Structure formats: C-alpha cells, structure tokens
Image: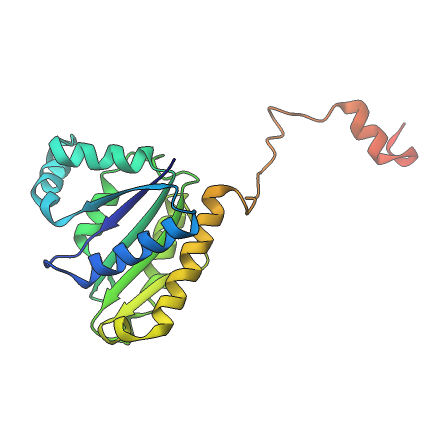
Length: 202
C-alpha cells in the first residue's frame, strides 16, 4: 500500500489550504486506483511543539509522530497559504525540523492558496526551489488556488493533472535519471583503452 503524507499549513479552521490539500490527496488516491493510505498533518496544532523543537533540538509527542509520518511516506503533498509573497513561516519551520535526508528522492506535489491570483508565482519562485534544495523530486505541475478558483472547473483539471504526475512517480511509470557512481562501479583501464581505439594506445 502506497503511503502519502499530506502537509497542510492552513491557520484557520476550516481553511482553503486544507480544502486544496484534501482534493489533491483524493485525486492522487484515485490516480493510484484507490491503493493509497493517506495521513494528513495539520501544522496549526503543532505550532508550540515546533517552537520548542527549534529551541531544544528535539521533537516530542505529536510532532515526533508527524516527522515519522513524513519519513515513512512514499510521497508527499505539501500545501501552504501565501504570506508576504512566500510560504508561511509555520510551513518553513516544519521543514526546518526534518532530518537532512528525509526528503531525498521523495516525490512531492506542491500547492498553495491565497486570496488573489497575484500570488500564483509562489509555486515556482519559492516552493519549487525549497524542495529542490531538500533534494525532493517535485512533480512538474504545481497547484495554486485563489479564493475564486474553487468554483472554477480549471482548478479540478490542474488537480487531476498534478495528481496523475505524482501517482506516476510513485508507481514507477516515470523513470528518474540515475547518476552512475564512477567510484563504486569504475570502468577498467583496458576498457578505456578499447574505447579510445588505436589512437589511445602507445
């Protein structure tokens, strides 16, 4: 069973951020043929624990469980509200307390919500570089939703496309570029001479 961790950084209850996160999770589960276990991590209740973690260096209780959920997940859906043209501080703090290699190679679908479409570039100028730095594999389609978009059929189309891309990565339908390690699998000197041809011999 595929495990999908969903991070929702909405600050209100209910929130448009959680609504978008749920729709992305549902679409991804459908794209995987229903074979997915979804765990939603709401960051709002973890705010105090996150602050404590920054001061002590140790997660506890629900925060420790949330971090373990991300670690064990096969894929991640991460959705944040937009503040000051970027992801929320709460969202960033959660990523800051993850261990350095937790997101290595993990497929991630990014999403964001805001009151106006003017913030739509946050996906590419803030979220995508952040997850690339953390060495995650971000799907090509990110999903931004302004308040008015929730009644627009085009949002559903973007959600389905992004969910399909995430499902494709998880199920292995899309191959990832693997860098060959020349130190663990070296080419022999004889092979190098053979490739070089007559000009490479002395």
